[in-house]
Length: 223
Image 1 (cartoon, rainbow, N blue to C red):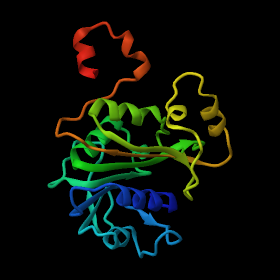
Image 2 (image 1 turned 45 degrees about the horizontal axis):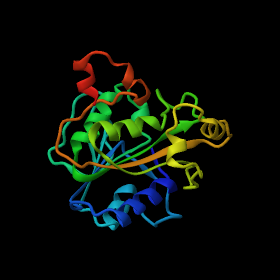
Image 3 (image 1 turned 90 degrees about the vertical axis):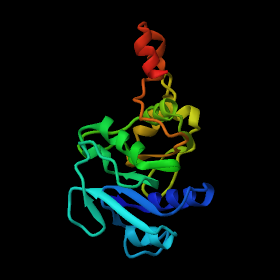
């Protein structure tokens, strides 16, 4: 996984605009290769976070690199202590169990902490098991009461599309989003959400199909 310039820009924006509960711990899904010296000089991703005031950095991965804890992200996991920043930078698309991944991120984040996702949108053929649609992050926020800090589409250098939030999450007539996705530049989704309450993770349901739920028990599960 690569911590590219857009990742660094996004994290610096979060740190400048959000008052985190503390900077005791940053948890990162997947150990990251740092390629963002054009944004901020650092010897590694660990060094980047330490220079930005965090006391401890832990990457959750299956390898044995430095500052990494061996974790199978397809399985249930709760870290010993919750973090004020949890990042998913080009990692979850390589894991099969998507529900487990987003539940792990939720469980590892403190109330008031931020969950940051930097994931492939289009075109990324065979990069991983999954590419992502923006409506997933809107739905995660609605289901779990997260505060959406930003939801953007852009390239690895930090160039962001001019589409509005409404255009990005539009489920019908999404002409602008389709045109953007047909370009030759590989695009990412950048999402930052703040956890607002201490409750168990709730799986989201796609907004346009909620009116079709006719069973009260199922409806209560998703609303």
